[in-house]
Image (cartoon, rainbow, N blue to C red; front, side):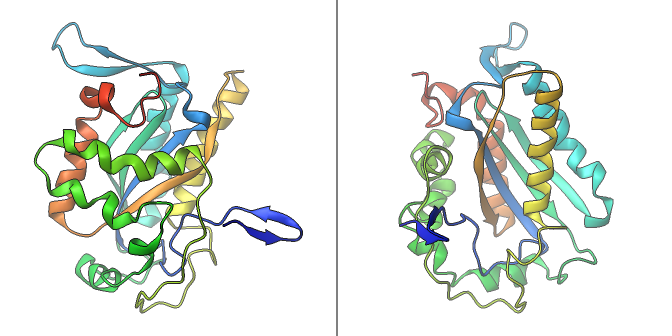
Length: 246
């Protein structure tokens, strides 16, 4: 349920409150447009290679350009960007935060150990549990992944339930909400703002959904499977849970 704050209902955050989002690690990010509107373009078949691809609108092109600018604008965060795709009403991308002066410098294996017991990943009923969301990533066929996107789809289309308290064992005591700079949230906030600013300056009708969904990638195997899922997203569009034009 939403919480009452100053006599107004407040939507609880989708972020894991125990997790330091400045930490060294890999993140699978999904950001949707408001009401899942197809602001970014449409999926077509390339006349040259026969592959599905996005035919972008002007704002669709900006959505791609600004994503890669995120890397260039933050050299002090030691960022790298993995697979990325712009779809008609959402984007998927992988952001890699390396060791830098703003995080604890943990390596990925230490990060994995910290997150294995995180109850938030298994108890968030509205997200259908983050662990269930990605449980199908071991499947070789990406077509099987469509059922696993239900949770992300709900994040993009409706309010989410309050998250339960966590039992994660983090060596850092920093709360994910304590600092909103030099972390994943600041990267996403800057990216969304840049796209929105361009749209407003150029009088383009566009709006993001207020939230985004992130998944902490725990190992190389999962990284490769998620990368493959992102890469194949256009070819799976007809069956995609995000496709509300069916």
